[in-house]
Length: 242
Image 1 (cartoon, helix red, strand yellow):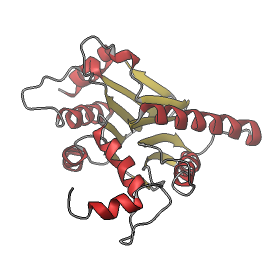
Image 2 (cartoon, rainbow, N blue to C red):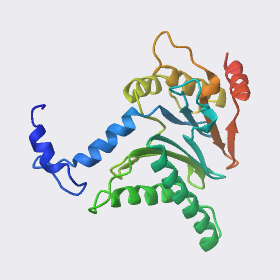
Image 3 (tube, rainbow, N blue to C red):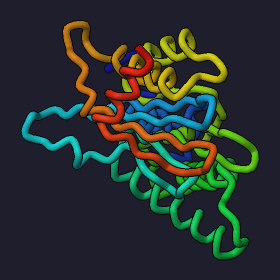
């Protein structure tokens, strides 16, 4: 048993119990699940926001098309997940319903930040009540609205923050180093897509070859349209950058 493990055993039974040193162990465990998930990336470019997900599979018998990591929430909002896919689907379903309800009640598309705060609040609720576990997923939520091009990350704890570029999942530290080095304001679509692919590539082993067909990419442009990018189109976009 590692040093201090006896303390964790006493305080990790429920998500609502703080340890003496101010930690919520169940929330920390949920974050560890996120860190084991394949990478998700989001960044702002000159005409909108770009989202990408690594869809590598553990078995050649598994069809990568069956793996959901990148989601369309509304015509102007998308999301990328890392962590438990089932939890991601549940939160995406809630987000889609909230977006539809906003149109029905207010006759206008929901603002990205409003939706992000709703999802973050739901995540936070699951850290406050006994008999429920935290959501084991982080989400990048991005979109375009009257306030501009918006990009947020929500964590299992319910915390949220806005970024110009962000990565979630396995080897996040290495991915963020690539984003911090390569990101600048007003990237073109080609430059943004190239940076996104380079960021995912940075999490591969040195000898591993990147397969463009295993990268799921979408962007939302200033026309507030969700555009899913097929592998052949992604290759064409990357070739323009060269």
